[in-house]
Image 1 (cartoon, rainbow, N blue to C red):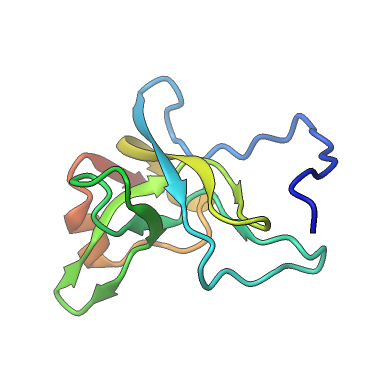
Image 2: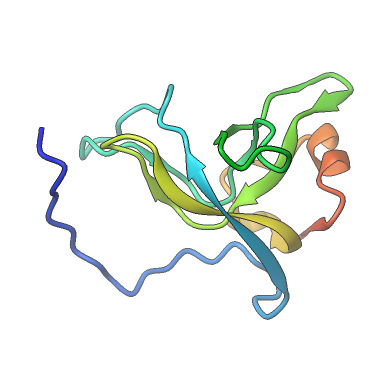
Length: 124
């Protein structure tokens, strides 16, 4: 499989923020492990996915879906845009501060994730 893929861009940018003028993101590399392909054969990690994996203490680590159990979560941020990992790990942005519209993310965060994400507020 070639690393060169023809991509068509559209004006449909998925916005997860409640207030789009107030936020902070960090550049991260999004992991492709365990991501299933959609009907088009693409592996997309959706915007609004709660991510972690020790990224804030080691920026060389890949961002993965946060692991949350009863009472604890390794959540460190929220994926800001959809990231296509079809061809392997890909760059993305992790929101670490801001206000997220709950209606615009794929899954509501768990109580443990909300507690771990101290500078992110989830609003209806």
